[in-house]
Length: 407
Ligand SMILES: Nc1ncnc2c1ncn2[C@@H]1O[C@H](COP(=O)(O)OP(=O)(O)OP(=O)(O)O)[C@@H](O)[C@H]1O
Ligand SMILES: [Mg+2]
Image 1: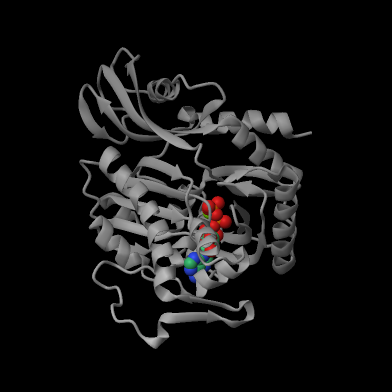
Image 2: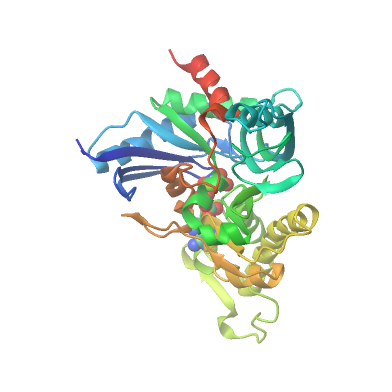
């Protein structure tokens, strides 16, 4: 119907919502315009992973139907996310001797080096989802992005491997296929968020993106344009809601309302000191009264849990990194007022809220960063492009799964 356009469907399977977008991408200038959107609440996940398959399948089908109605067309396949705290990353290296007599590095040498780096021993039920090359080293010379054609004896590659607990991947694939959609690609949530929120300049400089969802927080770190770390931990904005419900002795729906309406996080030295009459908050239809201070303490302790995890990663894994690109906070949880200042103070880094940029017809809302990034796929990713022969394990693995689940 749309000549000169690709139709792309993005599906973000989140712990609180399933979000679907149908968009068209102009083949000429790659501009993306959203044609339809469907967002459906779903309780079938736990900490980013599918727990109740049928519930998730039906929510996927509903969200895609809503998007189809708005877009006025049907879709058959999608790009979806994968998330959960079983996702982990590890650095790996591959080393081969250059095979040609003239010592020019061939695509085959590159492929062999990459395969060797991907060929690591993992505990049972874990597999490499994808490999992100960082750089090549030719006869000890580091930082090479395109080794093909260069002369040398030893070719090494350093790569970040993203690994996953296989049953999580299988359940995800089942849920999407059962909803009647094929899968074009699967992209980890925080990488998708980075695709829609970060600038190339930030990725070059060194930047940490934090996707605060409802039940998980994902972190990705880029340096010199490369992905160098990926972490997920099982705390998110729903932990704040749950604690509000417990602390103020109310139900989850009211707690969520209170969070969205009244919660904020204060940076040190910015807390209101004086007690005043307006210190009390009343929720009349629930005959609930509480002090702003009570709410503040609850929000502060859960947000501080999240930042303790971020600090751990910064200290343990990134001790040498300066990250002049700063920290970019996104995901629905990043909508908490005051978070940007809090992050700046807590991490002593430049900080901003990340929203999806440059997609026509889509609000610049942090909770849409992942689904928007899925529309972009991996295009324009890193300054490095894999030669065809050097395709990583990702498509092979996914290919096998398609074979298992497709009729
Ligand atoms: N204005 C707001 N203030 C505070 N929190 C908010 C606000 N709006 C949304 N949230 C929170 O954002 C969370 C939802 O974010 P998001 O849609 O990114 O999560 P998700 O993708 O479903 O979950 P996950 O990524 O953990 O699987 C909810 O916990 C919600 O309460
Ligand atoms: Mg999410």
